[in-house]
Image: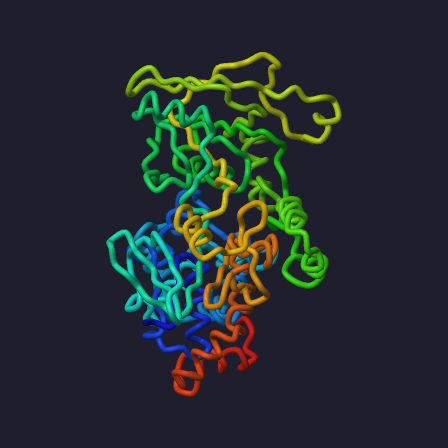
Length: 462
């Protein structure tokens, strides 16, 4: 029986594993269970598909133990060497690794830092590539069944499940795919879609106007500035530095959130707090330039009623219905203009990419459904877990990410939320019991290194 099993190998699960090691845990005490062959695989796939160059969050929101570790990492010989090699291979100009505002890191530096952590901590030796299908409580712990008919027993389990495997498909898109499997309609977060596979000559319609849609449109322009790119949006461009108010990172807003005992009202607070479909400042600026001055992107305030594709190799025809905007709504658009007609229109394109986010349902599917039923786990009316301050669903069973948002708040799904969740879990009685039982806290070199870095007072090195 292992001490800690983490189900989910994305940023949340990897940060949790790193924190357990930093508290004095030995790698042999920890196993990470994930369907992918390597850590962060789905997250890496998603970020590459959007074409993002920099993260939306500041550099301090990283998966290291010390929030300043990413800044120090960028100054290391290993990272500088890797960047120079990359430059020599593709001839691309170097971009700043941190950009204003809020010192936002490049995707390159974030991933290199994360991969270095995985290597240094030896997590790949404790990585198990399999999908969990059931979890049951047993004497002194839990038994997890995998799709490969393997059983894993653990004293403590952390459910670090994300929504990455449940992209949101509009009804018209699923109908088209059912009618014609060859139709080039993709979801930006589908595992079978890769941005680089879009033909350079194809005209593309992108459904959505959030940051993923904007980044994809701009990255496709870099490949071919002469192609036609159309953004189909159901709302105005929304400029926000973050996807929720920074006050949700601390007591400014969380005090009132935790004071509210009605979980339905907490859910309403979370939904209201999220800046869904919004854009970071520099992305908004670049996108507006492409729409207004360069005229390389068309913005259509419309939604799709239906889509058709006659045969392989022919264009898709979208039946779009523009919104009827009153004068006040026009004024909100400011300088932005777009093709507008109150009558239904037809738009012909070669490829459609959906940037419509993820389904709003609880992650985990049947794994969580069965766990709730067999262990009688408490849930709110929306089906999400009700947990204690240590994020325990029951003794030895912890949650983080989306599953913890009724306790952590609106940032629970983000990297900052991963850090907040790990802060709570490492203070649990279960962790103290693990360390006392193994006597690892005194002997772990990883724990000593993390404490030394946290106390050295170096701050950022770049």
